[in-house]
Each structure stands twice: as structure tokens, then as C-alpha cells.
Image (cartoon, rainbow, N blue to C red; front, top):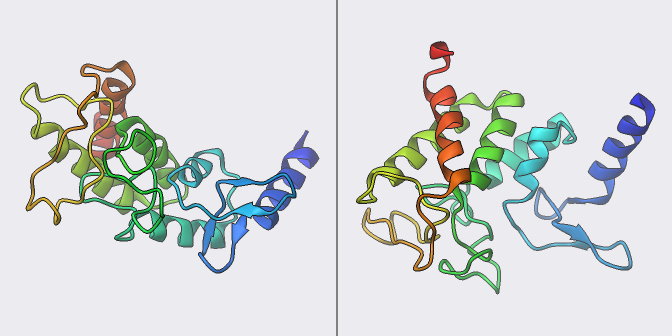
Amino acid sequence: MPRKRATLKINFNRDFWLENESYFATALDKNKTPVDTITSNPGHCLMTGIVDEDKAVALAERLFSEDMYTGWGIRTLSSKMKRYNPFSYHNGSVWPHDNSVIMLGLISYGFSEKAKRLASDLLRAKEKYHDNRLPELFSGLSSSETAGSLLEYPASCSPQLWSIGTLFLISSVVAPDLD
């Protein structure tokens, strides 16, 4: 099994890496050509350990770049992409659960300050809601675009179990000594 795991890691880092973006492709098309859409999904790869150390640095930096990071969390799709819409379910909104998976990966690669920033910003987002809960998702508009207001996603579920679960991870990131 370790050989298969090592081969998968080598192939993944070779085949999915977008050199010109310093980021991972979301998928390979039918011709095995990387799809260069910039999404939050490669952030999940950090949690698995499949990302080479040198690429992990670039990946983490991109997740916190202006086109991906809103000040409340990481968008599902870069604001530079043609399909970007901050009120689209998967094309630019922010999902707390998606961000929690990325948080786990950031921690596993030693990016604890980035994980703490993400956790703190999600807590600030939670405080913007009348019920003081993280919803299923919220708008991908940045805090600078909205003068510090957080715009809700019109059909977001709250409470949402996976968003509630995010709070347990956040608490372990912002106060790890409480475990």
C-alpha cells in the first residue's frame, strides 16, 4: 500500500499542478489536460497529505489571495474566473464547512497562523448573523466590498449540521489547549 500511496502523490503533484498559476487544477479533462479553474477544492488536498511541501506553500498563499479570500473565509471560486458570482451556490460563495476542511489541512502542513486567521474570520462572520450561527453558506463578497457587512446567501440553511460541526474545529484551532 505505501508504494501505491507514493505513486499517487507523485502523479497528482505532476498531473494537476498548474505551473503558471502556482496552484492545482480542479480536474483533468477527457484528454488528461488540467482544468485551470481556480476553486477552493485543492485546499482540501492539504488535509490528505497528498500535496508536496513546496507546492503546499504556494497553495496556502493562493487560498489567502485577494481573489480567493473574502475576509470572512475562502470562496468556492476565484473572483477572477468568468463564472464567478458571489451569490452562486458553488461559483463564488463561502462555505464554512469547506473552509473547515481547508483549516485541517493548513494545520497539518504547519500553517497554523493561516488556520487561526481563517477560524477567527469565520467567527466574525458568525457574529454577523442574528442567531449567532454559521449558516450553510454566505455571499462571497469581500468585507472590503461591503464595508464590513456580511451579505447572506438568500436560500442558505441555518442551522446546518455541517456548519455547526465547523465550530468544533474552529474552537480547536483558536484554543488548542482546551482539548
